[in-house]
Length: 282
View (cartoon, one colour):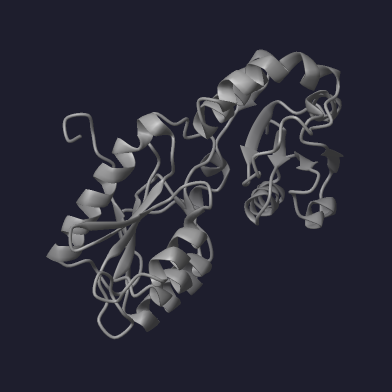
């Protein structure tokens, strides 16, 4: 099998990816971004690199003889004026700043193209974690009713409309009203904001209404920044009084599926994976 290099940001996904590689016998090497990646990556063949030390990360991947690369895990947008750059980072800085001005998708796409120019094949986490990719239909015992399906459709339209602005991958909709849009703070903080809204515009644990919708934006490179959800997402959505969560089948990674199912069923909520829209449907 081709050796996979994982450029690891924060969260559990890089570790899940490394674990999956070991389980299938695929050689793996992890480059942890300092201040972002979890110390647990040291259980695997690994190295560390500062966010601005792009040349260091490249040298580590080449020395480890990686052929494929996966860029995975959230990374906080840095203050570019305070980054400690190596020589490669210094040379790339003008191009990086130009991409960053266009949004996070443009910045990630720049790094994907640059890694490919260096001779690596950039792959998505779902290529390795295929068993964690959301299947079509409900995950659990509850399915969305007609009112929730209407909210899901509106949520999809909102995320698609935000594509040009490169804002986020999620929205909360309740009875045809857009309650929140995901921005730089991420899904968890958006759900916490939703829970602070007056109960007359959102659902409650006693009378659930509204849907969290998460899906990839139409123009984003799906090899990076694929939407993800897990038990924490269900817990926060439940606290906000939502009726459920909708994600795109094949377009989201679901962690701890058994716990997600248990929590959703306990709260009487749905977790539903809708089919990806084709060009004729958009």
